[in-house]
Image: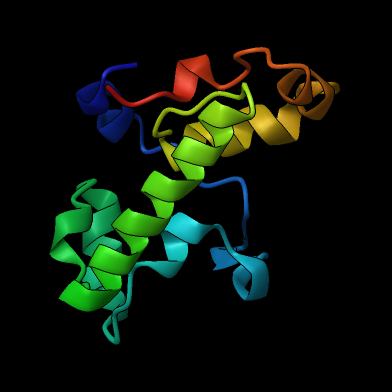
Length: 117
């Protein structure tokens, strides 16, 4: 899907149970980068697929970008996929595939469909 198609599809995160993150304490790194004290801002950003509307302190954002870049470099050195992934699509792939982990460890491009250009 293109980013516009994905936004229009409103695909729910597979970690949401009854509208609440079921993995909050160990939530994905991407999710940890966003901070908001206003649930309305988050709901609006989700409904309009506009994550830029959620406030992110600049120092936290820079740390997040640097850490993601480093993780991608390590993945590439290990012969693993090293692209930036659209989180919700990647989670659906990871959680719905019977042998996703084994295939990823074997160096197969299991997340290719979730890669962001």
